[in-house]
Amino acid sequence: MSIGISGLGIYAPKKIVTNDDLSKLVDTNDEWIYSRTGIRQRHVAEGEEDTLYMALEASKVAIQDANINPQDIDFIICSTVTREYAFPSVAALVQKALEIPSIPAFDMGPACGGFAYVLATAESYVKSGLAKKVLCICSEKLSDIIDWTDRNTCVLFGDAAGAVIIEENPSQATILKTIIGGDGAYGELLRMEKIGDKPPVVRMDGMGVFKSAIRIMDEQVREVCASAGKTIEDIDLLVPHQANARIMSAVAERLGIPVEKTYMNVAHYGNTSSVSVLLALADAKKEGILKEGMLVACPVLGAGFTWGASLLQY
Ligand code: ACO
Image (cartoon, rainbow, N blue to C red; front, side, top):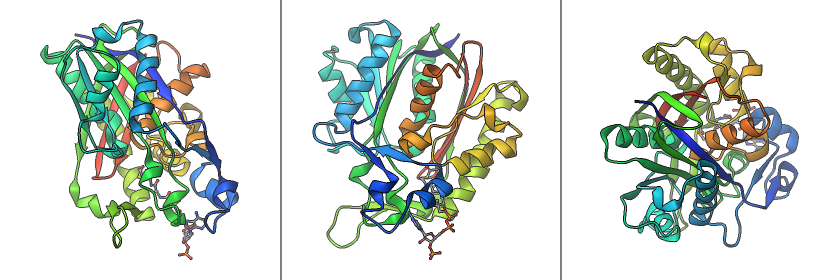
């Protein structure tokens, strides 16, 4: 049974915030941010662009790209850590907005590990026969949970959404294998913290995250290749979670994958958590870098820690 991606859509908010803009908010500068992270700018949502709005916009593009009707969808999963309310879920609100008759719809919150988690979940439901066409969404308005006075974190993140349609006999890419994992023992390294009576914000042990992310994403690529009967040399394009250019380069180097075979667009969007691989796949396709026939490896890691990797045959 071949299960995979039949449509892909992304949405990035209109407002762009450059490193120079941030240097007016906190004690930082473009040279520091770019040399440490590879980030030049990020999109920041405003006005109507909340988590649901971005999820809906990306979903509409994915549905069009898959050449299906919204009513063909029979399952929705949304990965987000920034939904405005605990309930109803973003997935349920997308179902309502797209006028899809009643279907299962739920959210999950694996943070930056979200892409592998939604893919593994959707694939399992299709494989088991519980779903035929799953709309998988990742939507993150991280600007809502960032402390804009903390230069350690506010320079890293951006807002965006992405969506894919997962079904049998896919028109774009087959999921050869997706693995997921995690360990709450790493929870302290990247967490939400409530200070006084203010809403909780992101706090991070930057170097702790940096070192673990490199080691674990390297392991994930090796494991997903081994379980799919592929070698590292078979990989045509590495599309890692776009946390930071230095993390991605180090993962590629450990794997022995040349940097030319590693796609990065973190310079443009910053770290958009669960959305980042979707933005990268969409841009790589648009730029003609991601081509039919390519074997693409997508390792991810996020708060929790959650982690995983997908091997996609385009
Ligand atoms: N501008 C200027 N100075 C800064 C800034 C900033 N924006 N942020 C921190 N600094 C200062 C620190 O206060 C510190 O100063 P001190 O030495 O006086 O205490 C100093 O810079 C640290 O500098 P470096 O050691 O050169 O920085 P480092 O190499 O540790 O890089 C970074 C920091 C970029 C945060 C790195 O640790 C990192 O990339 N970590 C991974 C974080 C990440 O990607 N998190 C995303 C979420 S998890 C995920 O998606 C995988």
